[in-house]
Image 1 (spheres, rainbow, N blue to C red):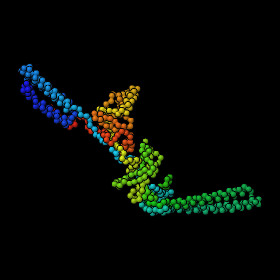
Image 2: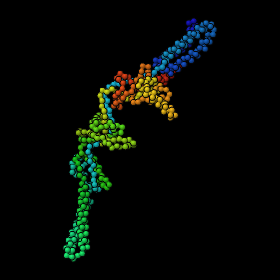
Image 3: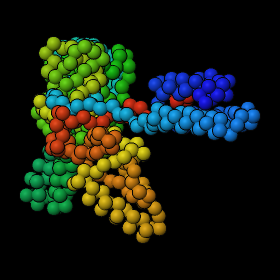
Length: 478
């Protein structure tokens, strides 16, 4: 019987052996359920395609031999089927995991701003005219009272002379009115003039006196304007900005034009940074600040928050608050106007248990098997019931859960607070709820929870079941 079976199957044995080798080869290389199902179906079709040929060649044999041959063929098919089922079994999704560890975490708020002197004074002019003299330039050291520039004084000198002449004129009128008033007083006592004439003399006297006062005030104003043609430094410091050149005409009409900008002390600088309303609650005075400037990319400068201003600034519906950072600049490396990229240290902890932020953002695949923790299961059921009930009232489905899983249709899987995921031995996933603390943008402190340093947590999906031919770029043909 064995010899007959061998003779009949021999022409097809090579193809069958090739099929089995291909199956074994791609089982080790790919292990994809969909691929092996395709292989299984093609193998069955191939074998079924050979059966009519086998039957045709065995028509001349007796029924006993034919039965034995058919039994042998069916056994071979069964063995191949079992092998395909075993080797082509489902390969589950694998995950990348990590262990929580104790680390040092520094929470920072990032911001940027301009470096400026703590005190800087704008020196302007209150009169208009041509700049006749310039006595300072950029980086000039000035002291309080030093002459910095001169505006052409000729116009204002003429005004002073004019007011002096006017004062002399009205003063002479005043003296004449005074003499007439005194004369009318004597005549009135002797009853030689009427009372009305005395009153007129008194009015002329008082009017002339007022004109003298007005002329003196005009003369004083002319002298003050003449004095304004000399631009005097109001403070001790250094000139960091010069807005005019020799011969330039300045006009002081509605606002005072700025001629110079004087910084009192460049060893004391400050940075004004804008902090969003979401982070302003973390900012307090006397907090340490680290910042860098493009001029010295390898140096980290230090500062301290000196002021948190309560006045808000709204730009495109974004509310920010100005925070002032005091900086010591004894070596004068920092220049006014530099852009500082500051990191405000709001919290710092050492040796705290932490997890990566990637693990907190992990979401299980939609087909993942979720195994709820006992304390979470009741909350999930309550959330699902309320979601379904709300969906019925709104006439809509409630199957938009926050996380993927094998929940039933209409179930809304929700979780309160942050948490991480672990993989069980049976391939199911369980969520562990934690309470987080500070974060540095990469790792987050675990403040409360059942998490330990030996608990493997999932950070991402390492690999999932894909079509083997597509994932390897292979074209399999039979």
